[in-house]
Image (cartoon, rainbow, N blue to C red; front, top):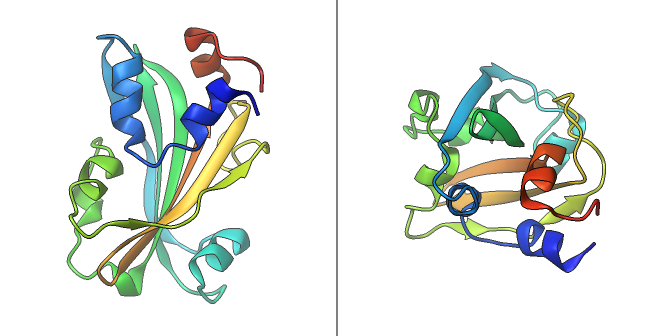
Length: 158
């Protein structure tokens, strides 16, 4: 992985804040693609330590600058751990804007992949995921950087 991509993939701070900054004043928007209750994919259940038949809150968004998706993201939170978090009310606000305001937030290790997003058709060079924990609440956040972002920021192919 190039150092330029490593700076994006390995960062542990808010991706929303970094994208907004990189956009140099261009309008940033979270586009809600889907939000529902359902079963996580087997790899997601394993990452969260859940039985395969357990239901979860699933949310997919595109993080856009000037209306173009730069990142697609999927979040998975076990229903048993939602307890009053009211994430279904996020709408087109970023999950990160809520997560990074939690004073006791812990982020697990970042897993990196060169595979495309399994939930979205747009191509991109890298994806990452990690589990965030806030008290008894946990959410798996998966983010896939898209070719549009690489083109706009003149990042190398990999």
